[in-house]
Image 1 (cartoon, helix red, strand yellow):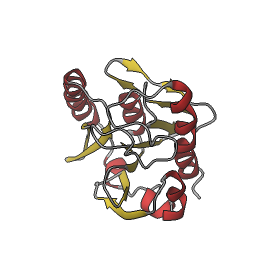
Image 2: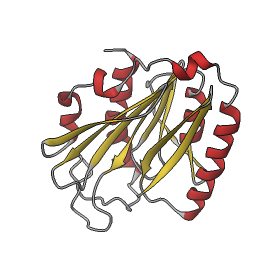
Image 3: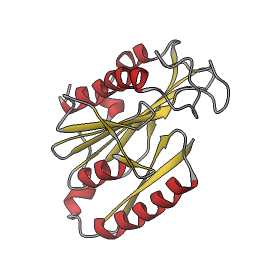
Image 4: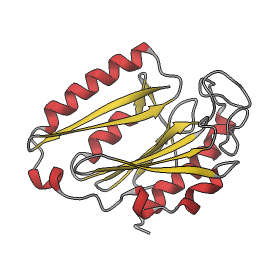
Length: 207
């Protein structure tokens, strides 16, 4: 698992977000670097109020531990706020053995669409549509991780569902037989992704 790097730039502030994805390749790294450069250049025109304001969709504030706990086979032992600046906010949820994790990230304002566009394509492959989530949402091809947007609010659910190379170690419900590098069949991935996407839907609703 390698991080995908997105960059927001505006009013002299640069925000970098590392969103985890499984099965990364060198081509994805190259794409990410290109996307990051484009984000930095295009984001430079963003209004200062857009990058300096707060994010009212902070997952650590809007979602409780109880909201995320049902996605894991075992209790969540660690909830960490991700320290992003400006319009980005994130929260990480982990199990005791560290083999499984869910990271939820939001970005608000004019940069939201750029983040959605970047997340909706991985390794040149378009995401698989998820219905009735925000304005539009997709999951990663061969995986369960979610990219969604409603209005000017971007939301992603990413992470790891098992160890790097040990099958049967996953602790996310429905994925216990898949390690991080496995391509997950659509019949398994789609229902799991829809459940995960409900976390974005809850954030979009502001509850």
